[in-house]
Image 1: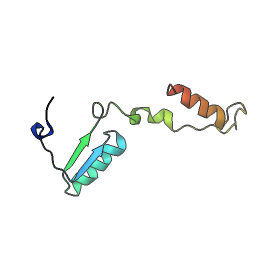
Image 2: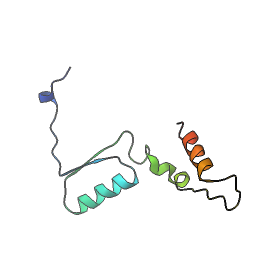
Image 3: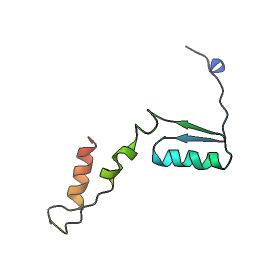
Length: 84
């Protein structure tokens, strides 16, 4: 086990957690303003977050075209699509 003292120390003005659309935009804006920025991501930049799914995450069902397609059914489909 490595002790905390043995780990490298990083200093930053801003730590951005998440590297998809919102996180990347925040990091760019902070960098443009002169801040020292570190981004922490669970995966590869631009390849691991919800931005990739955005075309599918901004849908809504109001039942205008088909009364069976309503907000409750939309919710159930969303939960099922996200595997719970």
